[in-house]
Amino acid sequence: MKRLLAYLFVLFLFASAHAQTTRGLPDFTELAEKQGPAVVNISTTTQLKRGHPAMPFPFDESDPAFEFFKRFIPKAPGGGMPRDFENKSLGSGFIISSDGYILTNAHVVDGADEVVVRLTDKREFRVRTIGADKRTDVALLKIEASNLPAVKMADTGQLKVGEWVVAIGSPFGFDNTVTAGIVSAKGRSLPQENFVPFIQTDVAINPGNSGGPLFNLRGEVVGINSQIYSRSGGYMGVSFAIPIEVAMEVQSQLRASGKVSRGRMGVVIQEVSKDLAESLGLSRPMGAVVNAVEKGGPADKAGIEPGDVILKFDGKPIDSSADLPRAVGATKPGTRSSVQVWRKGVMRDIAVTIGEMGDEKVADSRPARSMKPPEQAANRLGLVVSELTAEQKRDLKMSSGLLIEEVRGTTSRSDLRPGDVVVAAISKGATTEVKTVDQSTNCWPNTRKAAMSRY
Image 1 (cartoon, one colour):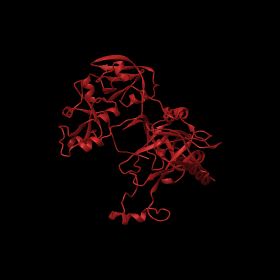
Image 2 (cartoon, one colour; image 1 turned 180 degrees about the vertical axis):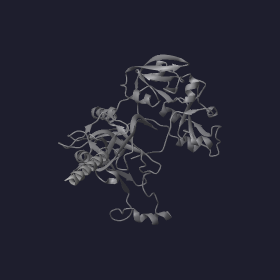
Image 3 (tube, helix red, strand yellow; image 1 turned 90 degrees about the vertical axis):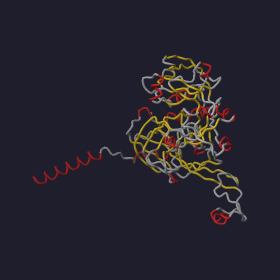
Image 4 (cartoon, helix red, strand yellow; image 1 turned 45 degrees about the vertical axis):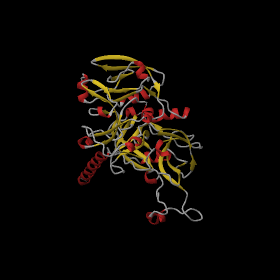
């Protein structure tokens, strides 16, 4: 009897120890079973005309390579080579209402001639695109169906770094694939993505996952899986999701008007570095320094000047330059907002009537590059620059600026990249507008680019 009791006691201790070691490991089975039906596969078809720049094999029949590649090109009916091509791609999405509204990424459906949604029960629907917002990479779709399973939304303000999260999507076309990881960081700023404080995770995201939901363990959507950071083009452990509050605000505007209205001030800004903070008399790096002010724009009318450091917008601190576009963009055009600036050692409060942001414009460097002689020398910073053309100035609504064509020498290891536009030189708190190539020795870029793979 004593042996039996001793055996049972040891068994109890083993079971308790086993429970302690497994208690912290989540079980995703119930989440996948309940939320999987609300996740959809999205397939798109784009018609490419013969000679289209995206055509897979742009070889003329007289080209020696034509004979090698022609066996890979589908034959047209009746023989000969096809005159048109179909480009097909895959993505993911999720149902947000039982009557058929679906969220996905804007780049999943961008330029598509046909979009088809497939549910987990194998039903397929042609899609009507309600609207898409490229700045946040959010698109709202609609299918004609009813009584559909829909997801629940989370409050990402309660999301914590280190928390378990789950992605469901269609990587490489494999429907309803479940992957899991943790939240690596919140509020990430990415190059060329000014309006989204991304959620960073280590959840495996691959081509086809784009537009799919990111869940917390309560089965609530915290974000839309949007892109990864990669040097290989595939998943490398760093992925980014659009917070669901951002996506839902965008979709509400898309549903109401088919477009998103954003505020604008008409300034070009940059981050305040440690050295720049010292030269401007700031106690620490903070805020967004104004490099240029659009002539006749809201900021110009309010009296904001180049060299001002914007520290607060409508009472909210601007800790980094990335905070300002989000705050201004979320403000309704026509709103009279208060802006706190640091100017030559003095704090000032300025009232600005927020304007409305138009279509996004970027500098097109190709015309300037095609006219530039290849032997042009770099300046002392290792930069080959050219003055903006009249067309670029008009598109960017800038009166001057220098386009970086090439970065050489040790400068190539800095944040400067070809395609950046240099607008001002800042030295010892003084800001000088850059208008000519000869002024380009001491300048900062107002934009940055990095290798971001978007799926």
